[in-house]
Length: 225
Image (tube, rainbow, N blue to C red; front, top):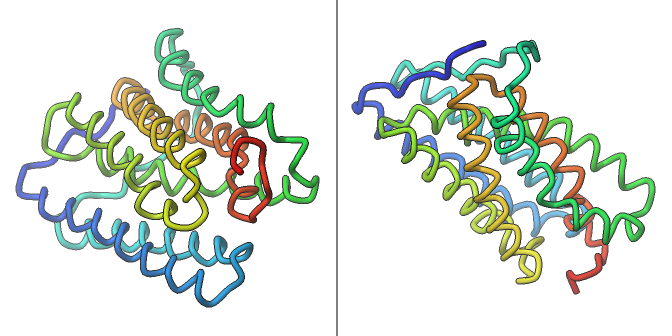
């Protein structure tokens, strides 16, 4: 089992904060460009391209300026997590959007599920390496890192996606609440286990269950009208 990276010296804090600004501001600019250049049902593809590029840029900046290395993935699933981390850190967040899936999956065209599965296979790797892997290196206590990561992960969904695709309060408010809980659970697990792969797998399940790409494509889901 790999141990989580310990927080670096406090001198790296300004660079960590800059990486956060890089991700939020660059992505937001990319979103504004996307929605003005492309039809709304296609603009999410360009927007997420900016999002992933901003994360990679932030990781590069952090490495160059402070020497903080990119968090690495341990690809082995063994040893398996014990029951408590498994249930609290992985199963609980994975099941939070299950109600959305059960209530709405019949509204989603079969072809759209291809986009959902591709998104779920890509998105968690970028988000976990930044919102858990990088923010776990904040020079504060473990609990403060959990709270900070959860809050910023939730805030990013409001700041980045809340103006357009998630603007409906019936979608935005539950999204912000559940992403806070998910972010806390995944950081808590990562700090205990040291592997990002398990939060990635849990995150993949979430991205399938929440049918987010259906929302981005403008499909009218039950309860989001």
